[in-house]
Length: 249
Image (cartoon, rainbow, N blue to C red; front, side, top):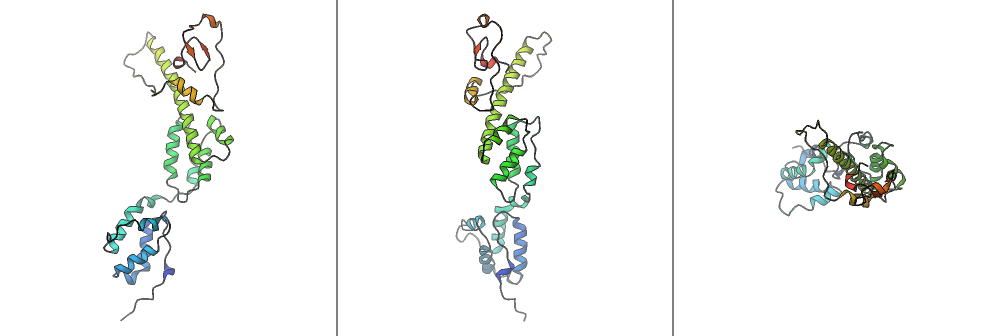
């Protein structure tokens, strides 16, 4: 009767948690062809061929929760199935650009989603890719360049601040446009009003962002200020005549 070959661990590669679990199982079963009927050996050897995060995962399994190698295989595939599609390299991120009409908030969300598809993640490289995707004309680009060694999390936070300010300015423009339409004789009452609503007054957003290096106040109001409505104050123009929320820019 033919004897199975002597067991050797050199046939195996370690699974670290960032590869395709189906491919790992296929190679493992191929190397263990003569031992497939020995569930105990299959399970113990498989556990020994896990490393890092995957090894930590294995030790979270409840005692006696796995009865055979088929069950272990199913649990393993279920845990690491998201890795099946993770085969991207960093050029995948560097090819990503912010569309001119795309909001910063949408760009950040899209970048985060694509970053999860990178095999070996490096924060500094991801930071460069995030910066590379923004136009040099955008105020955020200069801030990222001048910010020194910013972490990716800090870059995200800075982008969120810029996004908040962009939305505040767009809200002012939309409200002013809507008021103009209200006074227009040819106004179509069926036209929906589309503008962003904020949970805090725009003057508070201004107070939070005005110290940022990229923020610039508009020039002072022209003309005789004494003739303007002194009961209203604009924090943008730092003068009377209208309120901050009613200001065009």
